[in-house]
Image (cartoon, rainbow, N blue to C red; front, side, top):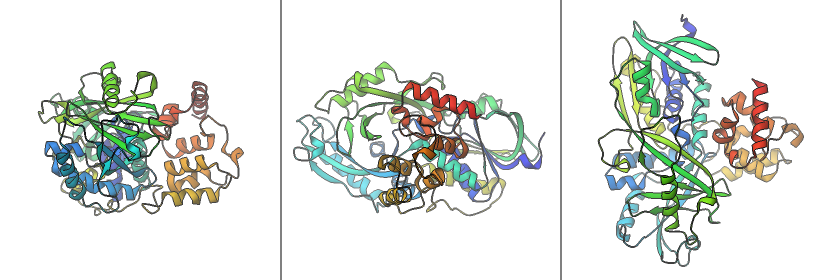
Length: 498
């Protein structure tokens, strides 16, 4: 049974970066919105990326100029929106003799510098690896490199902030809530849900399917159709190893198979290496790195680093499936990374299906999707997300260090490391988390790695966290630092709060 209170303009399926971005944009324009995610926010592809806001330098070789230009423009838009979780990085691309020639790399980077209207990010320059500190960890045969700019993002936090902003603008965000059926009817859709509080039926004028890797499954199962064959599943895996170098720049390495991998400083004490590109046909709930992928990443990194990267250095691995639009490309790495939006303008229930996309283009994709609402269910407010801040990001784009000092000044008892971590995760909302705390004792029980009950309570109250995995791997990355005993105590604490 439905009532006015569970009737919406728009119902969004999928709590990844596209679904939450669409919900945020739509709610900000005045549409009534509900979003359902069957697991936790960002529990699929959106937390399994290389965590870059970037143009995609290698996509230039596949002539994806539109995608690269759009992504390059979006780098600084997103950085300005969330300067606590997004920040600039410098990437070092060593010239590997026998692979792409130096002139070709330099030309590509000139295009990269000027295609997207770069304003704050510094330009490309040439490095002498025999003199620059970035040459020291590498084998002596590498003498020339090119250094360029892109940005880093805490991917799962970006998704959470999109959802948080959507909720602040009136959207209903329902996690751990599965769509088990949807039918068209007079006036729109009737949607059956199964969630923490049992079964529920809601109505919506428009259905948006942003299910990521599950987008075809939503069409096939929830809608009772069997004609959906739109997505090419490509698995990308990463390894995290103990820190390989002391400087703060990243590496992008060419490989003999024409692919590239990154080696990126990660969470102060580690190095992130990835990614792979393999077609995937397994169960989406069981995506893990294979021995072949592990060996590939270790071998590719060891081709460049003077000291080989070995299996015993690995502290964590993660894998995700990219739901790329199936454009018929022969090789996984050649499949388009651009997104595709398909609209079914049925009079008894319009539907928009979203295929592909990436972190960098999520805001722009969302804007384009919501622009399409006008013809389907009527025009409401204008575009608004370009230039808008995300929760916690209400400070100058380059003002992160000043924000850390401000928090430390307000809470002088905070250790410097904790003040920086809280600012990096929560920005200006760190004061909402800390409240009137006047000392460490006010933070409550410790779960290791400077994680206290006060932060856990904030995450369950404000950010839809339910489990230890939600807290340790998606809301924070403290899973890299805590013991099994810490995890068990945190799980028990969370269970007692439910």
